[in-house]
Length: 425
Image 1: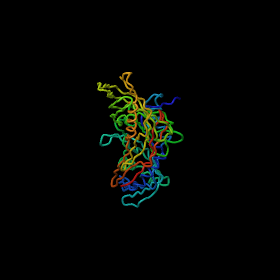
Image 2: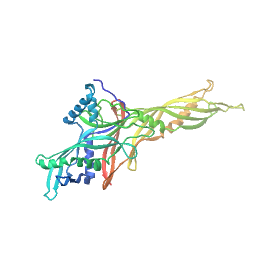
Image 3: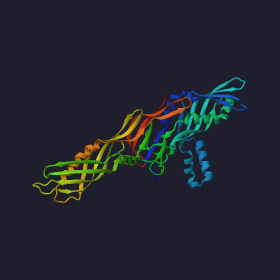
Image 4: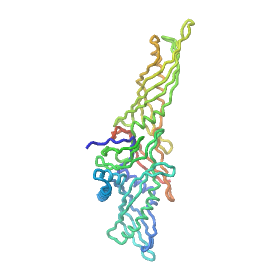
């Protein structure tokens, strides 16, 4: 079956190992969030205390029961040819959040407390929500849960009866405040992300796709970076940011030999085009076009009138850039630094053939090269994400950044890999 390259300009995500590592980081940074008391309604009046004794783990593969339920729902409402597509949409962005040791204490009103330890398994889904500022954010929410202690069916039943309260607490007090903003770039507008799950090379990934036009999800199977959170962006985003970041250039000069010439000129830069090469690390090649105008004067000898012309200038040049991470306070700026500009191919439009001024083109190229090589611009800023829970606050940051280039489903991508790190204030 033919693979679908999809339509998107940006992919961001992580595999289940990176997600589970982040969950452990979160658990260790905010232990108070993982213990809570609930009031039990009648007939089991009293209190229920839960205590996560181990960090939650995240598993992306769907359980067979969930996959079958999605297929059943899809087949009930849609024709056979659309069942698999609809089932995939129903389960997009879903995963299992589990705790292997959930301590539970049931304190009945007027009775003796009962303490046990069981397992908790929750169906979780990454949702696109709108925050208070009208921005799209990604939020993890649990939608169903099951507690099990085979040795204590009575307590299991009580905890299961209180499951709506437990899920509501986890969603509003633990998971809800972790809001991942939709990625945005200078002068580049992206559509709301589309979240999905993928399998590749024996690994399971949670992914969010976005772009400058509506997203069409690609076929799964791409070898995404494992063991880290990552952002992958294509040349369309790089080119769009660069096109607005490189300013125009004005210059002047003069030479005595072979003619006594002086000139001034103005150049603007357009059609910035980067070419990504998988495996090339953080070094990227590209090119740009130059367009402008010049005023050139031949200062004639022996009192004759000077001769002036105003030709147009056009041409191109190649670029070699480094994409680096630059610390800026607690943030990391992903910055493009033009390391080299060369291979200038410039020409004048409207110069009489009898006037030999190729030396002017060489002089302009010699002036433009160091101008371009001094340019650096920020593609994206990885700001810490502020976290505010009841009674405690902190930050989510991305550390140990690694920049690389990989083969994506619809072309090469520049990737930013990092380790999510939670810290309490």
